[in-house]
Image (cartoon, rainbow, N blue to C red; front, top):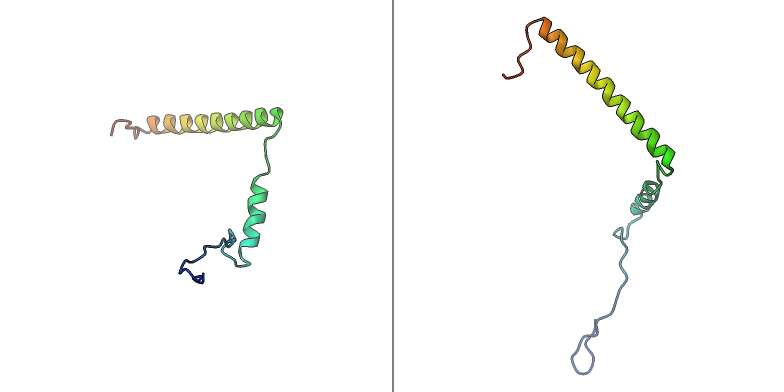
Length: 81
């Protein structure tokens, strides 16, 4: 800003770019737009995802239970140490 005849500097608004002004920010905008896509939009999709997640957890639990049984049989199971 240049001072006018009274010595005051007029403040002007200059629009700034969100990505800093370089062209490298353009792909990030596309990436942001992609992330807005909803994977589980419909109720049945949400139910299926929950069911699959629960099945995966149950499978892991059974594997862990089997591993603990093997450790107990080998007398190497010490839960408090």
